[in-house]
Amino acid sequence: MAHDVFISYSDNDKSVAEAVCAVLESKHIRCWIAPRDIQVSAVWAEAVVDAIDESRFFVLVFSSSSNSSRQVVREVERAVSCGVAILPLRIDDAPLSKAMQFYIDRYHWLDARTKPLKKHLQQLAQTIQGILAEEYPVSETIEAPEAEERTRKEAEKATKEKARQEAERAEETRKAREAEERAKREAEERARKEAEKVAKEKARQEEAIARSKLETEKRPAGAGKKKTKFRWLWAGVALLLVGLGIFAIHLLTSEQPQPAPEVAPPSEEITPLPAAFQISPLSISPTEIGTGETVNISILVANTGGQSGSYKLTLKINGVMEAEREVTIDSGASEQVSFTTSKADAGTYSVDVNGVTGTFEVKTKPVFWQEARNHIGETVTVCGPIVEQSSVGHDPIRLFMGAEQLQPQAVIIELSKDLRGQFFTNYGSIHLWYEYPKTICVTGLIMTNPLGGASIAVTDLSQIVIQEE
Image (cartoon, rainbow, N blue to C red; front, side, top):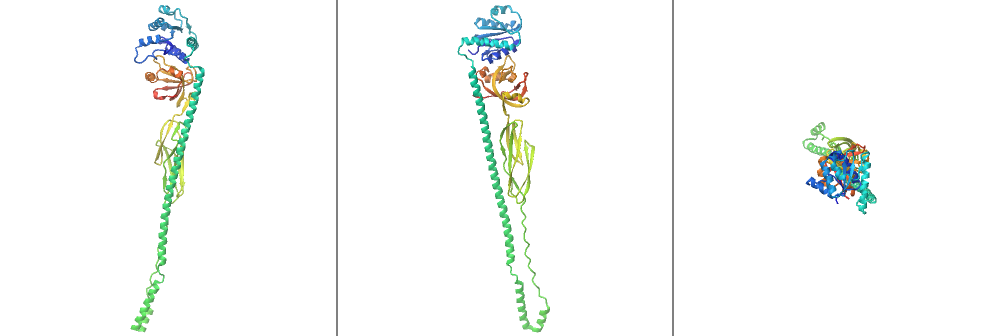
């Protein structure tokens, strides 16, 4: 038997019928209610007849509206003819019509005309549970010890998941640190090679100057005097041939040109090369963070020039400047420059530091359902078990996370009407969720519900993720 109870009601009493269904299913009593449990392609009348035939109990929400409803009377007639136990729930003082007198006058009534309604619904649930317990000694419902064990397993699962996430973050941090150290070593190696290149060039220039000085020093200093001696020798020979007197007087009175002193070339002064900078690829750690968490962005700057100099770095996130740093670095040295930033909104962010680019991703940080009320007005992911649901008529589907629907601490997940068909196609009957509780995570804007708790509106089923066992 797919269900225990068939709920019959007039459209005017759908809120009460919805409450009846919610309370019974919260007690693990399986219910059938239209139109929720009618398949898309099924014939309405056939589906109703089959549902009544397969039911153990027929709960009639009796009011002035259902008293005059032909559809409700036909459903009551079918239940009587099939021998289904009828449990009338009177919610107002309307007298029985003749048709109703004919079918249900002999049945015991559950009077729910006084408030609070939930008290009477709890009594109805206890009545049905008592009968089912007598007929089925081995209960089909989930016993408290099993529920406690399942809760313990859920807690262990959540703890393991948290530990796994922390391990993944630690691994990412380790990899980022290794990449940062590797980039630093590469930049230092490049800076060392550049410094060696500058030193070799400087040594070559100094060697050229020294060679030029050496060549100047090797030239004979007395070359001019030797030449003068030869001239005097030839002059003496000439004097012997022409005459000592005339040539002696001529030679004594004439000035002999002296060679100009040679000037050594000026020494060359070496001007050091100006400062020149190289930057390494970005190091972003971690590359994936939760909203409000901090990401570290670092870059290695190396001075490959011959002089000390200053270098300015500008950090841009999504094209918007967020910070600037200016560093002074000696020739041949390098320095690691770091920036930190955090983002409140989820998404992928582009990073640019002086033309070197990278990215990091911000994901919505999940919170447990007990913390949802602390995040009113924020878009977050809330995780927890579904313990109750409401989907009577054509109203939006409401799932109650963590607590029953009338408890203020319950987180209400409300799906739009447009998602009804797709939701039941994807997930089928929801009552199995709390017979075998599933933890789901829902992402959306946290709002305040009428009871003062938290609620999330779902307009796309992609907002819901069901955690696998």
